[in-house]
Image (cartoon, rainbow, N blue to C red; front, side, top):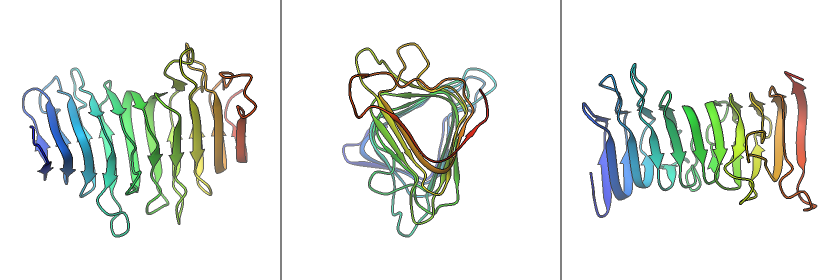
Length: 239
């Protein structure tokens, strides 16, 4: 689907192949399914995505799974009056966020199930509060990223897998997680992958659960601002 200005969808289901939408603004107001066949297709959104309802995107199937890619931003239509959620399940596929999520209109919840989720800009999910974001799979930072869950009522985050920089030999990636009175849980090692070390890692939460074996933040070792800072109670779930 290609449009010069905007494209709006109540819901999308593909029977064969995947989905590609190109428009300046892509309005989603229902479920997106590319998993009707044994082998799912991928979904690519080339343009700014606006959520006009709680949206789920599903490409997880019994055969091969598709991937989901956002080239630009993802926002709610109106965070002041609506609590928009986004759930993405690609099974063994990958998810890529090319632009900021919730940067101008915050989301209320964002759950992702994927083998790898590539995050290339900030993520703001501080609308509504009281929700726990569930991210299943590895996270790769393609930029210095801030996850902001600090709102009038705070949200929490659960990263089940590892978190790494995309390439610490060519870029210095930093990670900031601000859950304020919420909980931040890290299920896997951080910065321990090949060329995956972070340059800085700061977490603010009422409780910070560390369940991975290793935290490696030694990129940019001669920069004074590079450090690990935990603001909140730390609970060790592993050695």
